[in-house]
Image 1 (cartoon, rainbow, N blue to C red):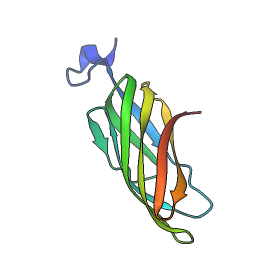
Image 2: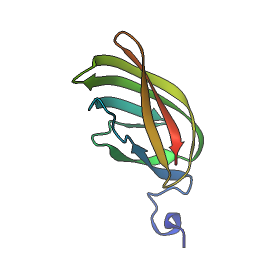
Image 3: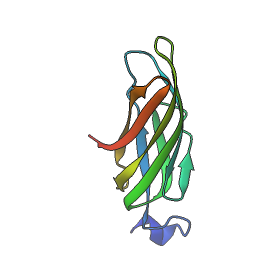
Image 4: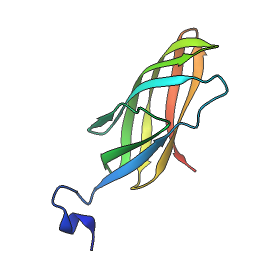
Length: 110
């Protein structure tokens, strides 16, 4: 029996997804706010479960900062579209694009 049939709070068109950041060689710390559809989260670990996200293609927006002991700090932003699937992992990756600026993306993983 689907969970939506036994739990009125859980909607069948909603998902729990895993935001995963495997780390980097600089030991950077990501302080990000992730918005996917109408849900917003501030991940506090390298793997973070984001709940109640609408399934299917969804726009996302990411803001915040990335602090690296060796490389310094950058203002982090990113946006795009992901296909939200229940219990799927999405890789959080970033790239330094200019002095003090970083681009963050989400992609289905693996």
